Picture 1 (cartoon, rainbow, N blue to C red):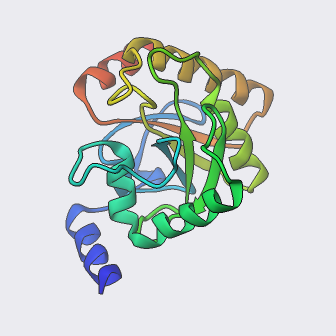
Picture 2 (tube, rainbow, N blue to C red):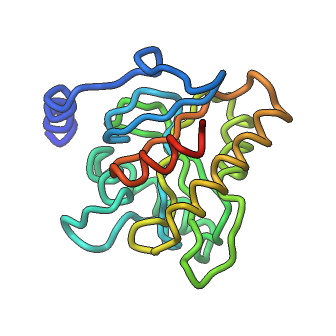
Length: 194
């Protein structure tokens, strides 16, 4: 019943495919919209260290949105991963799960830094895991800029620099979409990607 409901909701919200986007440079895209409607190989979830989804009902964070629209199967898969790991997920690493009711194939979960924490290369960990998993397109949300209050401008600079370096070292392997939801983030990325 849940899967049928989520399928109807996705049909109402619509799906955006990579072929519908225009690159800002070869292999790199900027898209403003709901990441849970993006049909690519994988989307990145800015997860908490428990990796079980947001614990605040109806909260507006990306973690909650992804777990909500993927369905309960995603939370169960994350719980199995974490039970086997026996400890919280460290900042800057990545885990791969199925996407279930999302239009993408997989979700890459990464724990971003909290404003008091150190800056890490979460983008690189996701790209390396995506490459090792044979994926060709990955959409990154703005990691840690919401609830964890990491500075938006600095987060965008780090993401663009890290992805750019990775793509130069690994040409034509993975197309990257920087997904933003807020106008402020769109303006930052647009300016930095010029």
